[in-house]
Image (tube, rainbow, N blue to C red; front, side, top):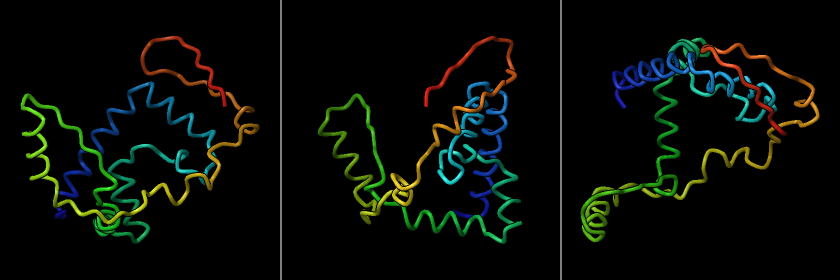
Length: 150
């Protein structure tokens, strides 16, 4: 996690964010977040961008790289990971390779980040959410109606 690697990742995030802005499905998802409880993580912005992650953290006197390292130190644990392996080799060979490559991943048996809010913060106030309709102008030329039940 060098400073240069953090900057490269910020550039990748910025590129993904720019791509998302032109996708109607992503834009609709962002608008749907307006209906969520603002205290619930589902209401938060989905991807971030270079400005929010670099300049926004600086403005709040937060060192982004330090926060990344803290998050990694807290949650980088085998019990938070899933590995899928697909290969032409037989199962015994694949298992041997996986064991040799991943057995050193520490297992701190930490709870997932969502343990802090899951089941404790209601995601949506159904009565309030039902009061509002949104008209979204699409980027591409299409016509559709989506009805979400809450």
